[in-house]
Image (tube, rainbow, N blue to C red; front, side, top):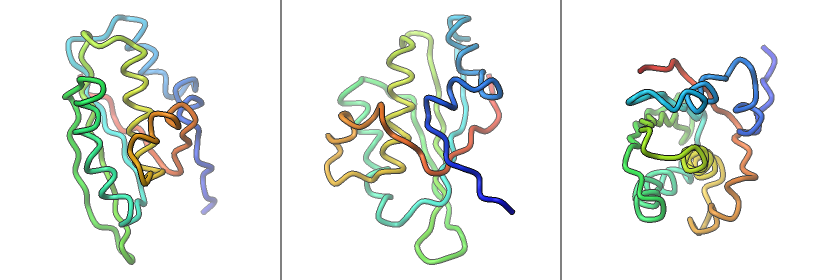
Length: 136
């Protein structure tokens, strides 16, 4: 099996096979959209940063539509993080994209200071992530 190259979030947003997000934006968004972003594998050291992102987002961006679940993978201190993102049309496109990038940045970088995420968020490159089925 060949290892898939990690994609820049912006490249994923632009790619034709991941155009549901663009479609959502272009159509103004349905009343609610839920999708999963899965990060795998995720190191033990990253969990604390990931677990605090919801509070961080609520404080800084006023968003409250994120839930997450974590499961153990076989191996030493490796985990799979699944993030459920519920998007509501009251949030503008820029904020929604920022929130997605913020999630990717925290899950992949595990910054010592979460404030650092905001300076890095547009340059964040997730190492592993998969967009799972869109549910509306």
